[in-house]
Image 1 (cartoon, rainbow, N blue to C red):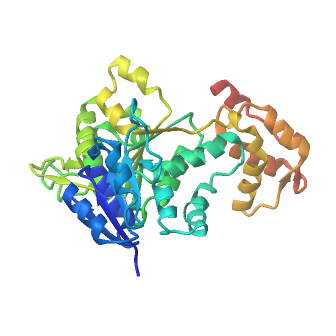
Image 2 (image 1 turned 90 degrees about the vertical axis):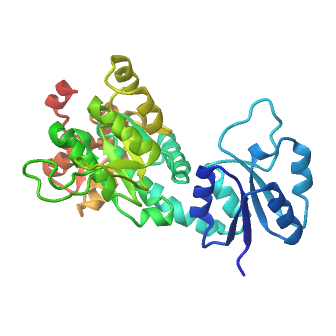
Image 3 (image 1 turned 90 degrees about the horizontal axis):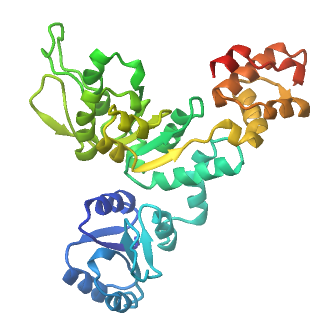
Length: 371
């Protein structure tokens, strides 16, 4: 018999998140009033109650409610409350979702480890920097908020976006992930590419066509180099991100879409805001969760493992000598993972044996000058 869980909240973000997460795992019901909450507390035994902390003006009511009929009682909040004693059963969303699942016996420890960790383990390495990135992705996966990946070129922001989509709730990760680099779209076509175009909008347009955002409905969309989005299109993207509303070019009808937005940039968006080339309101929307992808020079201890994974994926039976690893670790890698992979490919070509020694490894002088 499935366990019964009640949610008492009028916050649409909280109700949507919990509905996605708990529907199917248990008998799930949303309560709309304090009276309904009190009645369920009295009528049922051994249930789980998730209640919005903002509805409780005094902590005495909290203490009275949580001891009834063997229930497990949690208070939910999306923000830290200052100047108020924090109850021990207060859970901050979205970061406390896994804790609720475990305490509610909805997932075992084995399932908890196996359901998400295989995705984060795709991030090769064991350095403190990569461990921090794994934790950040785990937290972000429990939320619907926009994610902005920042960091230098070549660090793997697109790869992190793929992992984040795979870690999403089941209904979303089974849908499409649409990926596009903003700089790869000609500016004259950008609006129609992003939002779609209605038939007859242009002289040569013969039919209606879905845009990138519309085609990702139910799934996720990843826009790289978001800092290069033209200023005149930023209000339209803001509407899509903030309200979930898009409108095709040439159409007078708007429609709602359910999309998880993931963005990336290697530019300083704060500087672009000061220059007047990026909207402040759009920045605040797209950076609800901001995650910096560490440069390779901040995780040099991962180079040996990254190199082994590189050869393994390509079916190459090469290994690096200890001296070769040391040579790689002495370099600063301005081009990050992308430059390392290029260097490893060259080392494999230059090596006279399956063991790659330092003399087979060459750093491009042209790359040094470029970076």
